[in-house]
Image (cartoon, rainbow, N blue to C red; front, side, top):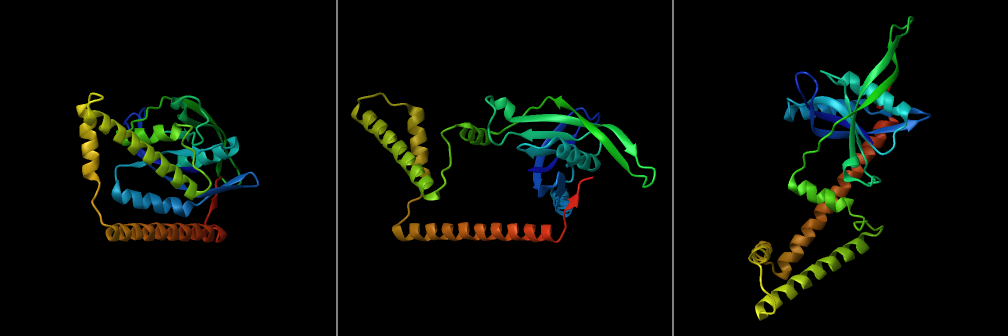
Length: 254
């Protein structure tokens, strides 16, 4: 997977802040990489309406990328980037690294040599030299919790959604039983209570809505309909991307 990285760049080009990103449909065939240029142009135009100050400052990739495909993709984003060399952000989505700091790395690539064809007048690069750049991730508290949950080896999604739901409900039941044991022990005087824990439990209980069985069935049914609608839109989007690929809307990165 590859995509565009958008953000801002300092006046001297030494610092780059990436604030947004979107994936671009692509595929490799016979050693060549094809990307949906029209999709990229559309997404970039829509993003400019919301964030006028953000521009393409580089690109990101997930998983293993062949050196030739990486060089071609970097040359493409070099034409889209203004004010300096594009930044290539590499994400370890499979969490194969032992250290959390290695899950995200950044490199800056520059064209080593450009050769101009005498007949066509087009310039082609002979290669790209990548240099590692210091990278700092600024995460909010909610995002940190999600990253920590993903990096835990115990958080493995099963093949069956029903089994996953059963495991989640079982974990929730265990946490409720643990909270009930704590409350019973404090109420009976067997253990000393913690005011912070009591406030947290009170806040959690007050946030739970009081619903009758009919109201719960209605809310649950509405949620199922929303999920089905999202699945329908997802399948429709996949079909449109497949049709766009069949209609040759993808372009070869050269």
